[in-house]
Length: 230
Image (cartoon, rainbow, N blue to C red; front, side, top):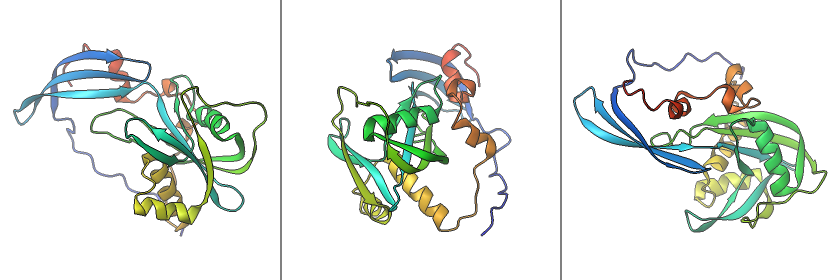
């Protein structure tokens, strides 16, 4: 099947139904920041909305070896209080491109480098409460990394190579539950099944640009909390 130009999904003429009455930031850390907005909906209801802003960009890589095996990283996930097997992942800084971030994370977590890289998927992991953006890559032609790389002091990581098809099975059974890993695996499966869609070129460029060059409207808001009406 050939790639085809998709018509855009419809957007209402006035899509934002909220009038913002007040914004108040009440928590800031190197990882997340929180604020509470007081709003009036155009249907008349007034309420409060808590927004979580992520300081880093979510980045992940589906790294495949020559035998179509996926490189997985095992670690304890503190918020869930359970062990998780995932693709290599990491948080990108504002002035660092997702590509720079995930190349570093792949080397630090697995001691691997890749000669072939391409954008795989972009998504918002939890858009009802956060402004987080996720960039997923596909990497192949793997080789050992040059130089010495070490995980963070608070990380204990295990490495496993698992056949791609078996990883898909583990998604369906619920054994693999990490959002970035599920999105990466299903995106590649969709591509392999012949779904005719190509990523928008402007979006693909963002995988190789620093987020500070193209902040989303949600992220820009943190620098302008005094503007209250939408």
